[in-house]
Image (cartoon, rainbow, N blue to C red):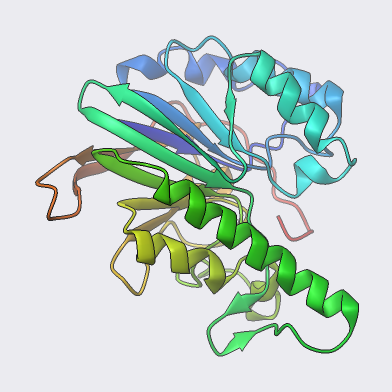
Length: 264
């Protein structure tokens, strides 16, 4: 099966029509499109309407999680509802199953949050603000675990905005790694045994990584893949073994991207 993915497209009101031409023939390259958050620039409903126009009605199913930019204006629930109405499956601690030509694909999605990685991470100790920060990530990881456990499919994908490992943060300053992801998001991926983990958020990171348990992780932030989307071909194998990659190639026309001075 062919999975297309992209994150961090950061569409603003001035982005209408810029990405759509590169997506028009996505069905020739992929069976499904997954969006790894930061779909808007400032998290407004007007920007979300642009997202809907760009990604709706592509001829392939589309599933997405929101990112930190999509939460900026405190309209995340309205944005999710608008995109759902446009036909995009929105995931937040939930999962969806797609019956694709190559078999069944299960996608479990959650925005995620920060906290850092083993040996260099925040702890649930001290001020209420610090405990709340870590608890938010713990809750998010728990919802991802539940969503993954709900799936019984040939191939399982974990879709997040924040990174589950440090291995795909290559070009990012180490000082901001705690704000780019958390090892807590990785634990359910390995425990449940996903076949692929996709995330965005790290604009200056690297595309490829792997969890401690051997699950492939891909950073599909558009500034990293430098294309309208990337495609990953996965061939389901015997139930006793993980699905295997038979090829990976960036696909689609190159699209303009913006780099931001904030944390992605």
